[in-house]
Image (cartoon, rainbow, N blue to C red; front, side, top):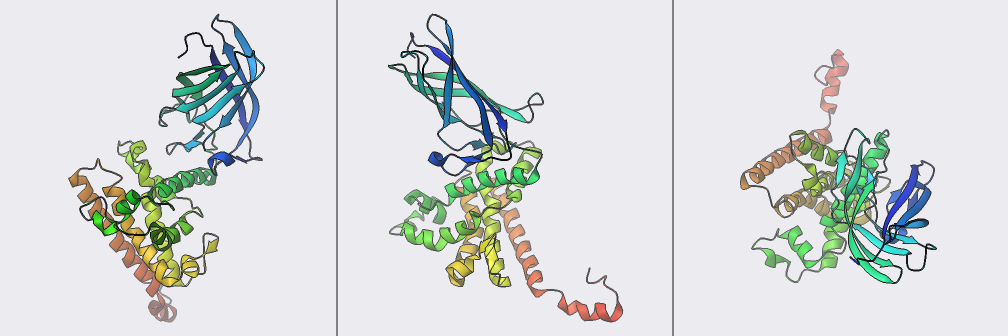
Length: 344
């Protein structure tokens, strides 16, 4: 907003590669499969002259991942140049005003990100700030189903970490236990560390190991298929995965399984009593997602969701009971008669 300042246009030419993966260590664990080919800036001065300069674009946060296309976009970075002129070098922070500015198009499959950004920093020795416009081509290999679900899993786990943080605030505890109701006083004096150890950590231990999270994606896809907008319900990605992982913890106890998702099963790590409690509590976390995190639902829709949810939970427990019971009582008849239709 300095009327005498220069403007700049930056460009980063990249190509995808399957042989390298770099982590933004200063912004958490999130791998971006990029190989930078060229980075440069076009500096346009107040007299409308142009200069080309090598530039450095440094991500400041992990990429934002679209739940519609699984494409990764860097939406928070710094832009620096050196060697233009002392009064023209850039040191700017560029941040998207909001994430959901992705456009699905046949021209640049599957999509690109085009939208408003806020900039602040320095041009030479002058402090500047302003509004910018950015076009970004996302990164993501849609030809590989495992890679697609890897990205969906990353987003799902991110939403779960918001819902079940390992360092919960008093508000998190209230949402988790009392749903911001008149019963919020039940959390008074509650130790956050004890809640994490007994309720959150056993569940997160399994969730954070990763999974395909296809159930979560199917939920968002269903919203879009009936004319809704899944972008408004990104937090619902957490619901199927939390409930599913809770059932896995209980299933491992019932099956006496020692491993789950490449590590020790929950009951082997935390003991059977804590595992049973954390696993069954996961079934009720869905209420927190619907009550607290989805305030726009009408009473009618919320009641219908509750009805469908509990029907599904009853059916699931019935199926689990039949699985535990097994089909051994039918085998003698099949062996004797050779007729397996009843078994089938």
